Image 1 (cartoon, rainbow, N blue to C red):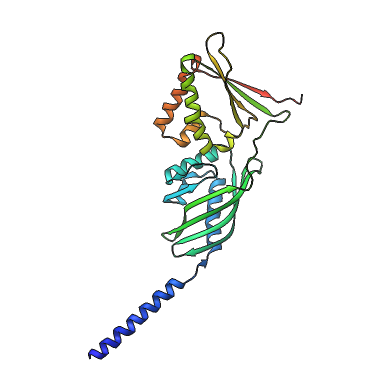
Image 2 (image 1 turned 30 degrees about the horizontal axis):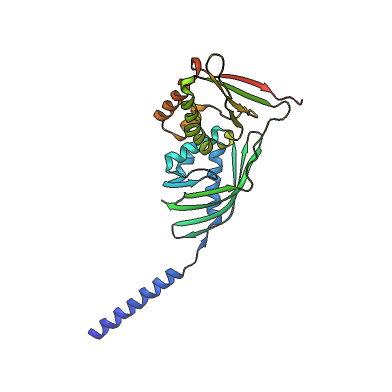
Length: 271
């Protein structure tokens, strides 16, 4: 009896060892078609500006790593990223899955992307690596990193394009606050969540004081693209909480003479 038990445990041990070795040596499984289907849902959600669906395509602990931007952590922050992206005029995204391989509940996808605005004009293209995680039978984005094939050129208006000039007459005792607002709050939000719009915006500072004591700072939208959302509060809300956004907006308004800036919509000439 003891001998039989020993033999039986020996057989079980050998089976478990063989199973463990087999599992360790098991290679990746290609699931390119499954990931293409998941990306189709993603692309449709962008085309329909359906941010709720987009948020649901990420895991709760997802992170995205935008090109030339800070890491964005969690569904709520990723949702703000997509609200801002759609708000700056993105109408369509195209994903081309090169290959996707599954390692247990994690899949790694290699691919190419392209972004389009109104009129089906492509404004960005590049490549990406996405880590997907299988949750309740569905593949969701767990980690996403991408970069453009070429750095986006800084655009300038051509003849007959519109240009928007916004004059900010800043109170003499608020110059430091105005520069702090732009450098440390507005610009970081624009770079991270409204990069395409930020590429069209420049700012000039004065060389001297105006006769009434104010200082003139100029926002220069060159060119001004009507489908973009240039709103300062819109950009702030993309990065910060509503309370913080209102606080920073008040910080901006407090700097201005009479609490208002002066916008001028102009046409670029050919001379």
